Length: 221
Image 1 (cartoon, helix red, strand yellow):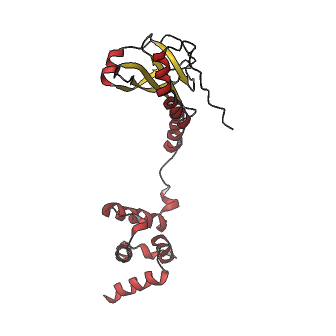
Image 2 (tube, rainbow, N blue to C red):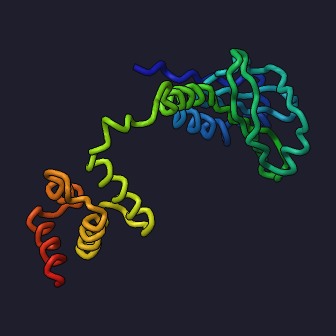
């Protein structure tokens, strides 16, 4: 069961400007962290005193009232959005972040909302997948073992044919299937035992239809 998301109360320093800031944006912060829990943290900074006014799903171990330590606030308020950029969290994990300016009714910049996303967990997943897909110790198919693997040859030809025509296997028309049977026949695909049955299953057609197309080819129909 997931651990309940940690939501921090706003600080006791509740000036009218800060109260308006939190009333307008705190629920937005909570919505973001709820959707992306447990990977996202949202911090609202009060520009009136350059301190943290609100924390939702605290990942950075900061506290309400801490110094914001914002850099180049003017750029953020001028551009309204800065990022994505990366930061290193207290535990050494990488965070991908965006900062957006928050405005009051008069259109003045009153705060900055920083959304910090923990990408380390996904990097670990990617590393695991890369290791698995790279296939340590994978060698080429043993020639002697697979020299008569007609199924492999059919599969290779079939998907090459599909790629050339940009057609998906599940969207083949009746005419496509007929053309494929003819093309496979020209490649000698039907010399293998039960190959007609295999082609029929792969192409989603009856075995009798495969034989019908082969017979028509021989008869020159």
